[in-house]
Figure (spheres, helix red, strand yellow):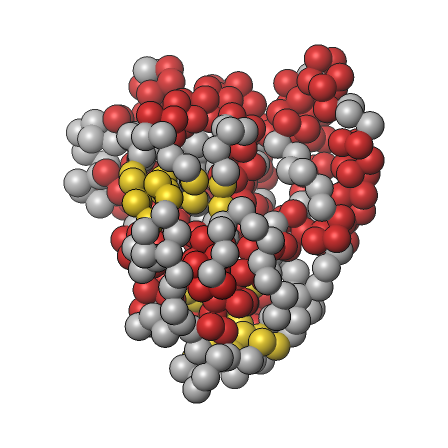
Length: 430
């Protein structure tokens, strides 16, 4: 074979492929290499496969797709690479090639299509929440765990405890700041986040307002495209990105705030995602420049609201798309350290993914379960009273294996401190 196995639409760059010198520094931080010790399930192994495919020396079907699908896309290798290899760019170029050119088995195709028919749509998620509440009330999860196939068993095990009042609640479109305004920001409310973790959004609004930010939350916003981008569904990601840009660019705000690590990493990539679209690339770049993770923005602001003491040993789990993809590690920690009494501790093997990785824990349930159990052991090793992490996928994954450790988003812990209540208590009404 002489022609590339990739099609002509944005294949992995030969220049980026050549950057990898196969040194092996990525191996200790790669979850799948740690699980299996297989070279082709390491970053440098996958880059070698991409190199072969670019040269036309291997087909995309078969082993190539199996090893690419097995990658969590956690980007720990990007952090650990001394040569600056942009594995994130290579993976983002490769997965759409697989989605376009490799026919999947019918059951796999239906399962993946089912995920994308549900999760990016808030109304459908709310309808699913109704069914989920009945499902849990009838105590069906225990029965289902014994009879469902692995993928469906994993999906039902990740189901959060459904709170219908929160799932159907609406966020106020505008929250005024306490005291003199310092910034005006817009909040991305998210899909899964707003239906199943609505309390994180309300805490975000309260904390930002307490710190002097006027918060605008447009009702017409939809899915940002993060799940599609990470899964290689490029048309889905591009269309959702354009809709998100069109919604938020109309607002006269200083920043666009996001409290979901996976969404935030995608929002910051819009300029790259739409770089070949002359009508959108400048708008996308301007949009991405305004995006801030909520802890990133709070770390930039001098604390204004009084913090009340919370005496607790708190473990912080770095969500991969916050720590590795966005390089935001110190900011969440510095924000949490503003709370008097908090004893903040890091986890062993902090760089290893928990196994959530977008839709990975549903499409690849066995390795995701191994990684979830490994992360749970590392959490228990530090004996925390609370665990905090900035991604709903991580919270769902870890709750499956750590039902004895209370878990919160960092902004919820800060909200409790500002309000002067214990973190597990319901927030005071405004």
